[in-house]
Image 1 (spheres, rainbow, N blue to C red):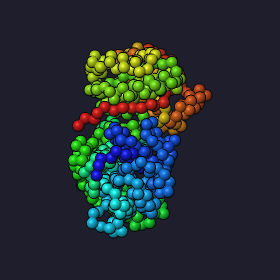
Image 2: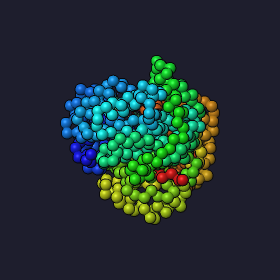
Image 3: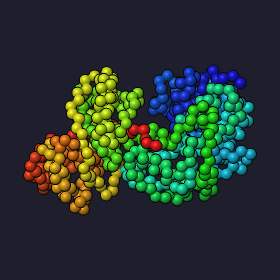
Image 4: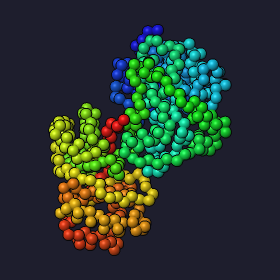
Length: 512
Ligand SMILES: NC(=O)c1ccc[n+]([C@@H]2O[C@H](COP(=O)([O-])OP(=O)(O)OC[C@H]3O[C@@H](n4cnc5c(N)ncnc54)[C@H](OP(=O)(O)O)[C@@H]3O)[C@@H](O)[C@H]2O)c1
């Protein structure tokens, strides 16, 4: 069969795998028609033809098949009747189908005898595709690396992550690699009738995966075991039949230790490691706030910019983040966070370095070029100041949660000693020490002392900007002795506070 020259229909185009299939086909110069239930929110590239529909609506699908020579098909659920009919409709028009199937499917067993819901549904669709007589390729991935996102909520709110079967190894596969295989199968000859079992390159237990997330993001992430059956019931809903639950549970444990090199073999590129997947998804896992508490950050630089208006503020933040894509990441830079001032003009960069010497090295070798590129991308950036700090002490809430706002409270100090003494006094009165209830919405305080002794900075986290406004209003009415403490402390001068919302944190390439 000839290589694909017509349009390729991508179903599930807004999904984890589908988005990368769309991107890969575009890179290969292939015309793409992307199927989504809601084109308005699909956020697909402008030059992609986006059409409204679903694989679960066969008559609607028929309208989008003119000129289509190949299709990428994924199952958005287990409604096998609708999917079988859709496959039949697609088969009437196209020459080639690439199915995102599942590693759970066993060869040599009819669909009816496949163990478990997942294997059964995918096998039914595989059989339906075979019956159409088109050229087909079945991708049978095992567990996706992207399943890690199930842990994001717990990581963000600093609760223990619940691991199902923490000791059972698997080789999580990166969605980019599944898509790369799909693009090959959609655009090249030689994949007809292939059933590709896809995994990542290394076997890792869930506990080890979580440890890697911790290493990459500089967080100490606790975990506890969650019974597989309970997890499956939450996933499927209370009314799920016992055998369906058992099928999902079996899927977690049935084939531990499967690892293939099919991705590299088909694409000619090594498969992404789990570490690389985590590095590409740290924002999704941990949110936009930096890991302020990380213990390997020996030096913190807090740099403040001012721009003309809120539009420039966002543009400057985006440019500061995007610029790292084209630039070598400096040795010793652990994480770089950007925060947006609620005044619509200020931006703060919070960068964590292993040591001051690493920052100095970057200042000598890389900073000028980066600044020039950013000034070219966004006009009118005023660089107000950049102060080097070390984290001194912290007060963390008993029940941590994901903060949505950061308030930077600064003091001028005549020495590091003055700053430290003031923080020690403050912490003696802090709810974290006295056992009093914390004001509602207050998440944590991280006190920093300037390396040159000239400042103390309180990085205070709150649930929302409004929560901080409430705390300030309540404090003004209450009998709060902090203002007196400030006045009493010789060599200390308040500089006021500024409110920020987190924009984004980028992490360096992880070691190892
Ligand atoms: N996760 C794993 O470990 C694993 C392992 C092996 C195989 N698989 C298989 O891989 C597939 C999932 O791939 P994926 O992660 O790329 O998919 P996904 O991101 O979960 O979803 C893909 C797209 O399907 C559409 N969709 C969702 N619900 C739908 C519904 N009820 N009706 C119609 N369309 C719907 C959505 O697009 P719109 O909102 O734009 O319409 C969504 O963006 C499944 O078939 C799964 O069985 C998964």
